Image (cartoon, rainbow, N blue to C red; front, top):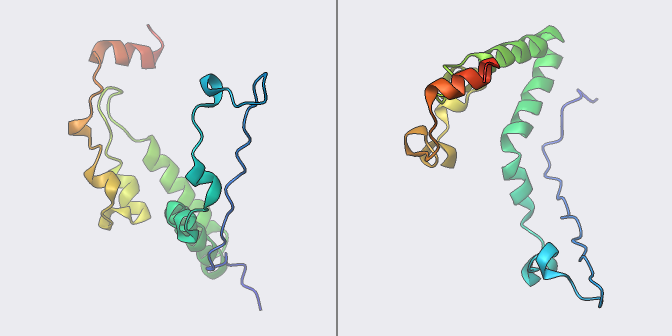
Length: 141
């Protein structure tokens, strides 16, 4: 009996083969291809690496499938609509948004990850003139 849920088993993905761009003398052109890493050609990454990279997407897919099976088709659609409207809420264009509403809806507000510690808005080195950024977003500039 299948409920249409995504698989919980980790499916290892094989990294795509890196073809060397050969030059005129059948030697890789270092100016366009760069230095090749021997380690990346010899060993594959850990199978959990792909799973951890796609953790939030896999969790969302599983939650959507469970909502669809238990509550009907309207529940995932309503949830997606709420997430999309939460993404659109923001500040002025030159102020960074914390996306707190989206984090609360998706449940990421109780998780602490590297994105919470590193690259926070107060430590970013990007700055601009507020009037120019606002005019550009409005199409005036």
